[in-house]
Image (cartoon, rainbow, N blue to C red; front, side, top):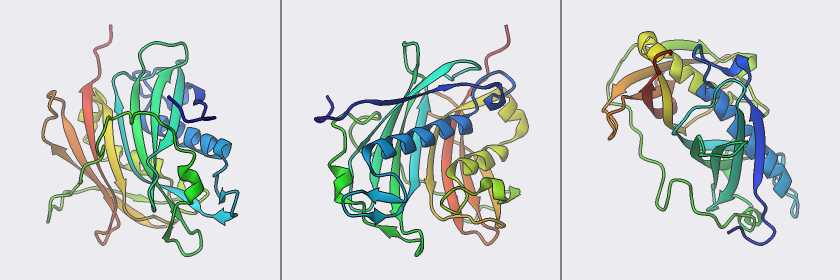
Length: 264
């Protein structure tokens, strides 16, 4: 059940050819674009869109993604219509949670689910500030999509590991309205450091990512990936790290993969 006056918010996206991998499936970073846009649309609808995130007090701030976990049971394909349903819940002093159900516009079993944790940043001081209390009053009374308990794990990169990585420079195209690299580009950089032969034969179906520091235009980053232990279902996994050349972490993440089905 929804709290009083809380209606479902669903955005519909039609998968375009330019968003697809060679096998015609939607690339994971493009699905993350859908989630980000839907979150922004719903925040505006609820009255806490940046830069004014509390209409009652005039409080200003910028929403930044702190953590994200997404799990897919199926993958959208070219020309599919994807229905992204989102709802906020579990507001704390310095963070607010938002869940997503990635469904099919025509009905049927959903493609998957995602959960996220957001923080509010002072755009001048570049520091976290308290989430306005009014936002908590607009949380939804729905079960978290990953069930009760914390959906996130403590991610660690092996101490002393010097795995060679891919080097990238943050260009103007990577910078968002908050003045730093948008979260989706980190996922792109992460996936680029997966061995090409493996990536060509598999697709990512689960990702957990934590964002630790921002990257600005002109900064260089190094993206590294290490094979991880097999998932409980036997699926291969990778551990990912995006850091600056001095070793300061920007992002840590894990991914789980499935083989690309053979063409019929």
